[in-house]
Image (cartoon, rainbow, N blue to C red; front, side):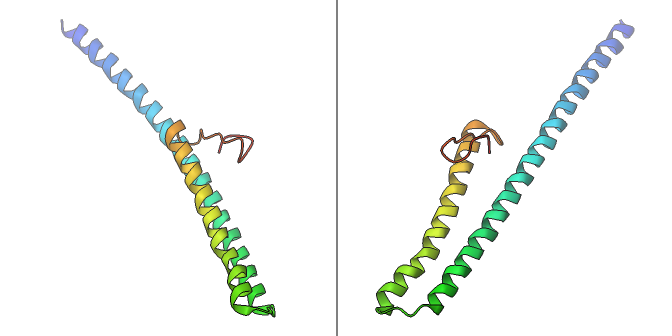
Length: 114
C-alpha cells in the first residue's frame, strides 16, 4: 500500500526530472543556435553597411557625364545590397522554420547546415 505509493511517486518524480533535463538541454542548444544566427546576422549587417558606405562614397566621388541617370543607377547598388541581405536572411529563416532551428541546409547557399 503506502510503500508502493511512495515508490510510484518516486518513479514519477524521476521521469519528471529526466524530462526536465532533456528540456534544459534543448533550451541550451536552442540558445546557442540563436546566438550564432544573431552573430551571423550582425556580421551581415556590418558587411552590408560597409558596402553601402563604399557605394555611397563612390557615388559622391564620381564625375558622371549624365549625373541623373548614372548616379541613380550607381545608387541602386545600395538598394540591391539591402535586398540581397534581406532575402538571404528570409531564406534561412524559412528553412529553419520548416526543418528545425539550426537544421537548415541550403546547398545552393552554403555547403553545410546554417
